[in-house]
Length: 289
Image (cartoon, rainbow, N blue to C red; front, side):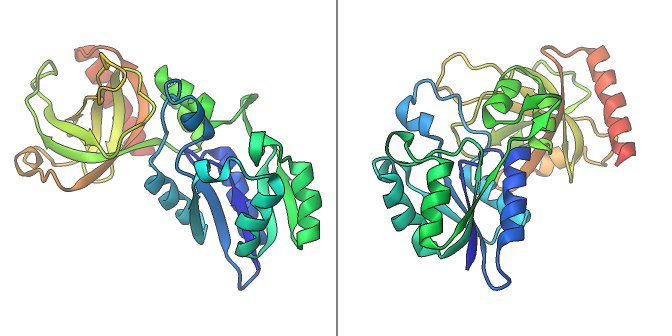
């Protein structure tokens, strides 16, 4: 028999990780830890113009969940399920997965008009042969962790807070291509960055301290968008002190993916003082690893 957890899981943040840990602990020796999720949260379908964007694309969400020990990820189709009654959801979606435990968050609601509650899940689950665990929220510095608050931090350049709530540095997947330095200091080796996928929460414009495991530390520039649906413009400017990478710019393969983690927000504009501060912080961060 399997242990199931259900939710959006955008970001796989600290609260999601607690759900995943409990799910892994509750699976039987021959069972699986299964994550039931959705590609987009309900607000994407009900209020698409107000939806701020995803933290991670579904493929990255699944990769992170599996890295934490989830055996199986099932992506549910929200438009198909939204009109089910709570009992229909349990019978048709959860039942075939043979659960012994169902682990959900404190604010989990399901079924038509969100009428399914955790109390209903506990009671109906007993009739169906599984137990229900309701996991309380996680707090960081007295603030409840949620994907919504993390989106707020990213939109406002508060990357340190976003990373703390994610319990990991925020990551951007994408490819690199040669680029001119433009307005960036000519001493830096500059590359254009194209993020994989679309529909992400917009990052606050400006320069970030970033790191790639192969290329080392860099200044990561997120440019402001002039229109809502306009794709964001990113560039990477290699600091070069912890990797021997100058010639990399001449041989960059635009098909090779490079993942960058954002370590801190530096400034909306770049000058030599910001550059030296970035190098100093990058040196310190590299030395602490």
